[in-house]
Image 1: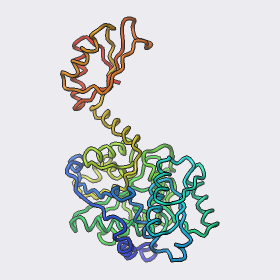
Image 2: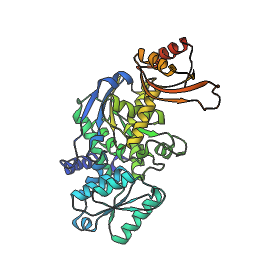
Image 3: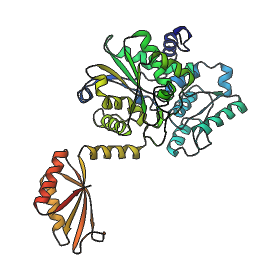
Image 4: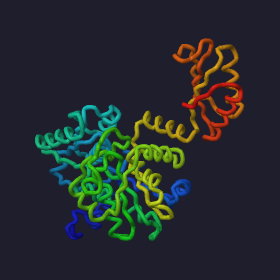
Length: 407
């Protein structure tokens, strides 16, 4: 595709920036000293998780709504979404006194349904997945005359998301960035950012990141196998088929697309919480995960990392953080066979406490298969400084005659 045929231009993105100014937060960009040390790159974080609804989707939704005619606003808008697009559209439609209907899959978590309804939208639960919900949204549009608002494959949406690219360049030194790393699902976010960045700084690499199993954009461009799909922590970019418009822009302007594992995404979420004190959802952490998984791609470069959203379920976040502690050796599960007599539990606790470790929980069982008669098994979760500290505790217990297995 020749640049003159491109469906979105720098002028469109700049116009969108003026249109949404004051209605959408200008989110901060800051350099992370610690993440720079960890990754070997100079890391600049763009905190889109700090938007009011917790994700970048507000930009495209607001730009789309601003461009509707008075008659179109009077008929209302409709969209299919189970996540950030739903909340963004509902919120800004309410601010603009425009009726919004959001069609969500029937099994959408109650919290997402409640949050969307809270912003003033009418929520319709329909279908077993996004495709059936989208068909429902198309039906509502036909029956009511409401305008269907796409999640990503629309020039107005793409231009709105591209305002992130403008801000990134404005918030860093003029020649600071060597690369911008962006999560990719349907492609609206990276398309808009690429339009802005490549027009102003053609030497800056634009790199997309997709979740393992959902590399639909890579497949569409002939760079990877067909998506296998399945469970993922990065629901926000779990899109098997990208848009038509976004595919054309990515083909022209995006330098590379990387695929990251679920474990790297979990690690990125944990680093966001522990180091940056910021909450990220799976999709929102994908760009940072790419720096962890492919350090040689970015070493010694100035890299803008788009943290696209922070809407993660609290229970899922707790699980991710506990798993991160376990991987780093700061939370270990010890199985200890002990004589079933008074004082043994206290002796184990004294050894662990004497080494300044913290017992998080303990289970004492006599009736388990494989446990000898007159013996018991202790299952201890122990918080430690690091893996070396955990090894020190195991060695101390074994030195006192206890048999210890690290689960």
